Length: 317
Image 1: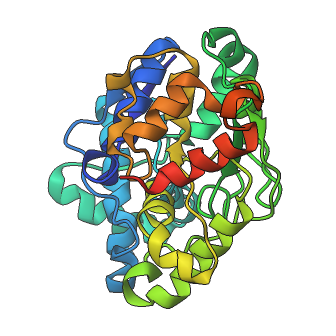
Image 2: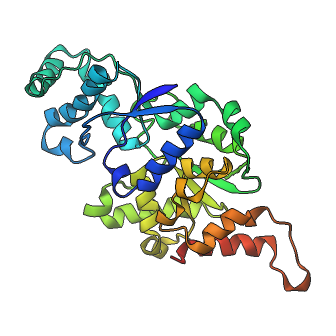
Image 3: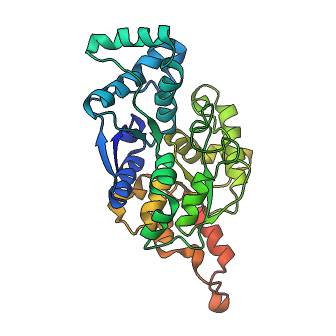
C-alpha cells in the first residue's frame, strides 16, 4: 500500500510525536508514505473567518500537487483538522462549477489546477478499512492486555462528513485498540468537542469542555486520540481543568499505543514529548503496571493503588 502523506503544520511543530509514531507504525505495517512535495498549511481553523475562498484554495493546493506529482494517490493525513479541510474541497468545491472555477483560477498562478480526482483519507480510515484490525492484531508482539483506554474521536473526523464511521457511535478506534489487546473504557464523551481554538479566545468555555471529557475518563489508564488539537487541549490544560473536577490522565496518540503494542523502540514513539507522560508514567507503560497481579502482602500496593498512581503520574512532568 502506498499513500500521499500530508502531515500538516501541527505534526511538524507541537505534535512531532504523532508524525514520528505515524511514520514508524506505517513502516512497520509495510505501508509506504510519500510526503506531498512543497505542501503548505491547509488553513487550519484560522483561514475561514478571513476568506471563504482562501479556506478552499489552501487545502486545494495540496491536493492539486498530489494529483499532479504523486499520480493521484489517496492522500493520508493523521490530523483531524487537516482531514476536514482537505475533505471539504472534495465535498464543497468539486461539483460546484462556479466555486471550482474560482479556486482553479487562484491555483493557476502557481501552475496548478485541481480536477477532484484525489481521495482524502484519515489515518483511522486507513487503519480500519485498508489494513484491517485482523492484520493489526497479527502484528502485535507486546499486547496492551489489562490497559484500559478511553477512545477519543473528537468532532472533526466524522462531522459533518461521516465518511468511514458512525458520527455518533463510532467504533473504528475501539476495534483497533481491542486488536492491540487493550480494554475499552466505555464513556459518553468519545465524540465531544474539546473546545478547539476556544481555548485561546474563550478559555472558560473550553476548560469546561476539557474538564467534562477528563472527568468521564476517570477509571481509564489513558485517553487515546487521533487529533493534535484535541491532544493539546486535553493534555496541556489539565491543571486548569482541575477547578471543574477534572483529574489527571495520560493523553496518548493512537499511533504511540500501536507502536508500543508492536514493540517499537522508544525513539519511534517519542513519549518524552507528551506533557502527561513523565519518566514514571513511561516506566509504568513499559512495565505494564496495570496488568500486574494484585499484591497485598508485604505492603505491596494493590492493583487499584497502582492504577491511581499511574494516573497521578500524569502530572509528574
